[in-house]
Amino acid sequence: MASRVDNLQVAQIFGEIADLLEIKGENGFKIRAYRSGADTIKAWGDPVALMDETQLRALPGIGKDLAAKIRELAGTGVCGYHAELLQEFPPTILDLLRLQGVGPKTVAVLYGSLNIRTVEELADAARSGRLRELKGMGPKKEALILKAIEERQKDAGRHLLADTAAIAGELIAYLEERAPGVDFTPVGSVRRGCETCGDIDILASGPYASLGTGASTSLMEVFVAYPHVERILGQGDTKSSVRLRGGFQADLRLVPPGSRGAAMQYFTGSKAHNILLRDRAIHQGFKLNEYGLFRTTDNVKVAGQTEESIYETLGLAWVDPSLRENRGEIEAAAEGRLPHLVAASDIRGDLHMHTTASDGRDDIDAMAAAAARRGYQYIAITDHSKALAMANGLDEERALAHAAAVRARNGRFGNLTLLAGIECDILPDGRLDLADDCLAQLDIVIASIHSHFAQDETQMTDRILRALENPWVDVLAHPTARLLLKREPIRMQMDAVMAAAGRHGVALEINCQVDVSRGVARLDLNDAHARLAHERGVMLVISTDAHSAGALANMQWGLQVARRAWTTPASVLNTKSLEELRPLLRRTRRAA
Image (cartoon, rainbow, N blue to C red; front, side, top):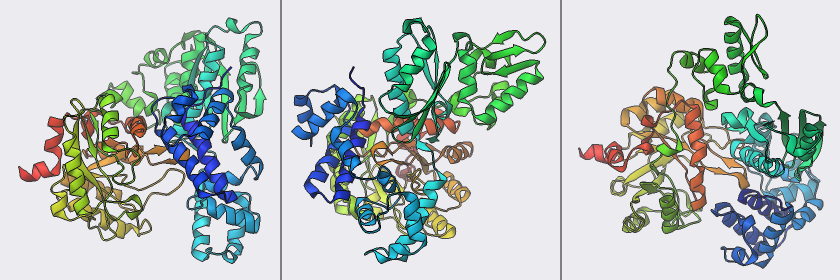
């Protein structure tokens, strides 16, 4: 039976091949071919595993060799060449690449010169000063590596939500194909939409007869036989645990249909939410566990088949899993105050994306066509400004020429309106990277920080406050500049920034950028800061920061942050119609 692999998994394997080739010192052309192939596959809208060789070779950057490897992955779930390369190095070598600031060339030097194979060995070498013996490895580099290791260890065992959800989805698809009568549901941190997740928890319930005699054991045998299982941690009749490739632990639990809702509630969590709910049950004369809600007096089950029945019996409105974090949701459910959370159907447009004019992988037409297919009313093309030289940022002349090219596309994509914008760097002193007379001629201006992250809290706060005072700035993008599991947030006084954003009418962005193949995600603002902004009346905007047409689909991850922040559609800039949006932009208010 063919193995199901999605585009992100194929892209990740090609990316790892490129990294391993670079560690080996192979020629640059071959390395670039795999990186280019990974970029193409990651951004492609249709599943490449379902394409034949002719269709694959029609894709940009996919030749005969890469097409054959995609077909191999589609058929077997593994790539022989990838496995061969992994055999040439210790299995821990890729862990080094997941450290911030440690690339394939650095890993090659560390492995070749000092035989460093693990993160622990790298930490020992850095602490003992042995790294300084290597060319280009001074005390500063040593300190940066130690900091990266410290941050990585702090987040040990955690994985990005998008990565975890993709792995869980593949596993569930495998199980559903082999047990079509069974209902499989992801629970735990994945269902709550937490920005990072630990284990993958899956509930199974339904008629098991289709699996034959001894059905529960048979289903568990199917589970532990999943091709990506590296090690079986435990196997029983109702629960099994496995370690999957990539460091994920997955648990499968079988529950009877009559307890499905209680089990979903219990295993979704969070622990703090469950404690409050159990306390409420006790005070009302009930006992609540993963099997159901029982009357204490006679142990009769009164609810448990659905989650809704449990909450309703306890006098509560059903609480969306996104809110189950003991942040006032139980009280709000009791008093009928739960918010109407923003949803995908509320989003009218995307106000932050890049094209080939700077560091994007698709041109204006491709981005617009993808947005039109999503049914958007508008998008903003916001390529980088000149300070980001590595991203081919635009100076004033190029920015205005690019704006004209963007506006010239209006009318070509149905009812989609293209706004000409810029993502303008905030310089270390708080000035913007482009002149005001240039910014004034654009439709929307996004300000952001991409450098000098080490400024102290006072410097950074003053820097951002000065940028927010600029009369043309509409959005502060990825405000804390963090990269989940890779780079800590910058230090700033968030209260002061939020107050200034509210005073000047600048929206704060929830940036949806996720790149699973590189292990990079922003989701910035986080849910706590987004809720604070929402409660203080500061407008939010949920934007993908897409660098390819396929990345427009990452809107789902920013929406999840917004939902965990209790955000309603009224608080989100890009839920507005174009007619409602324009008056909220600063240039319109300034003109009025």
